[in-house]
Structures are given as structure tokens and as C-alpha cells.
Image 1 (cartoon, rainbow, N blue to C red):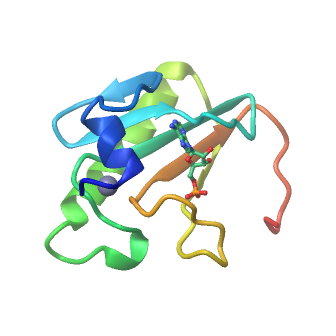
Image 2: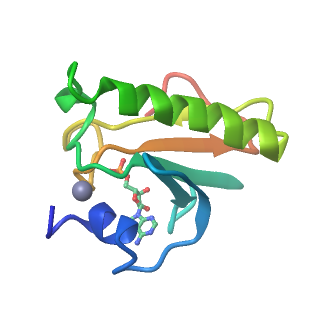
Image 3: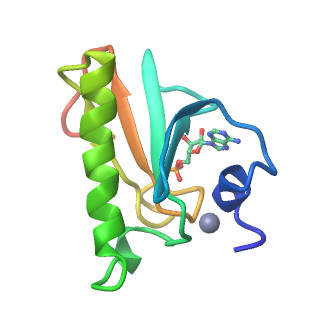
Length: 112
Ligand code: AMP
Ligand code: ZN
């Protein structure tokens, strides 16, 4: 999608600090970290949010979770939180599916 911030990051039209990349997904550090470790894992294909996941794209989403497991394992992170906000009321500000991976501090529950 031409006017999507994260599509532009995937296309290297906007710089980012890469954590991991393969043919299906891209991971990069959040520009406004909310924990000592905070990165985002996104599919390279444009999917607007979890609410747009269906049988045609769910394999890519499953792959994102494989990648989350691999990155955290490689980083030696044993405890972390995965968050995906869907819609404005839930706090979604970029409408390209992304999974926040947060670690390195105590987390509260329920989330705010
Ligand atoms: P959300 O608010 O859940 O949609 O998450 C979007 C996230 O993208 C926020 O945590 C932002 O800090 C992050 N973000 C926005 N622009 C950039 C950027 N250029 N590079 C890295 N992270 C970004
Ligand atoms: Zn996009």
C-alpha cells in the first residue's frame, strides 16, 4: 500500500533499525520504546490488522509467530509480552499488522 508507513519501511523508503528479515516478514525496533527491549514484527505483505486475517494470509501470520520465537530465543529473552492493537480505541496508530514484542521490565495486568 503506497501510503502505509510500514509498507514504506519494508521498501526501505523510510529507515528503520532492523532486527530480522526473511522473505515473509520484517522485524525492527520501535521508534518510541515502551520497555528496555521493544521491537515490532510485521508481515511484508500489507494486512491492516488482526481483524483482516483470514485463510488467504494466516500462514504469514503464523510465520510471524515463528519469527518472534526465534528472535527472542536468539536474544536470550525468556519472558516477554506480545501485543497487537486493533482499531483506534485499542490504540492502533499504524494500520499495517504488527506485533509488539516487549521485554526487560515488569509488566502489569490488565494492560491499560
Ligand atoms: P500501534 O500504536 O499499536 O499501531 O503501534 C505502532 C508503533 O509503531 C508505535 O509503537 C510507534 O512507536 C511505532 N512507530 C511509528 N513510526 C515508526 C517508525 N518510523 N519506526 C519504528 N517504529 C515506529
Ligand atoms: Zn502496509
